Length: 261
Image 1 (cartoon, helix red, strand yellow):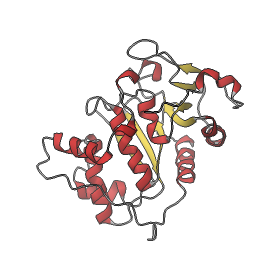
Image 2 (cartoon, helix red, strand yellow):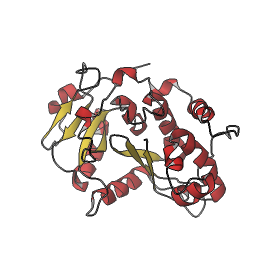
Image 3 (cartoon, rainbow, N blue to C red):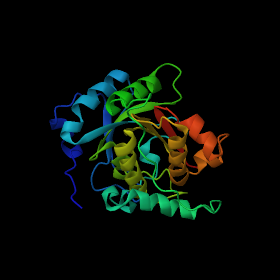
């Protein structure tokens, strides 16, 4: 695996316009040998997100919104475990999903395979993934946002899907303790559905979706992947069946939300 240089130790020299904030290197295994992310001190703004989205990726950093106000404080106390995470590119996403599907005791059905990408030629034509991510962040940072205390963060990562693994995020640990495997699935969703990781909480993840499924059949095929990826989304929801979840949470939806108990 080729490891990219971490730009965070030389953050001050990268020419970014940074609000007050600091580097985070605290993990469940003690101080990490290099910073895992930079985190702003103050509440995120749409203007700050737009600035980071324009200027950070060219220097090897990907912006994400971190919710530090949902009762679990900030990532310094999130039990980050970067030493336990594999590299997403080392995994086949379909093999990951099939393994997780087979581990679900309630699922007697055979793994149905990966869903096809949404029909970009249909009524829900694909949109630019970055523009959709901007729109979702704008809505999340508006008045009445469900986020308790959103902060802007910068993560050294190849792509948006790698953010959870790059910081050693352990939010799904009760379901999958190697977040690199889940980031491999997120990479596949980037390629097929134009997703971008836009927010992380202690055990929550929200992605924007540039090319969501536009037919119920497509959405139901994708719902099986979501069940394997995050069973609590269905098992602890009023949309507890594949059909209901597909229709209400996936069909033409510009964002997907995940949480692990």
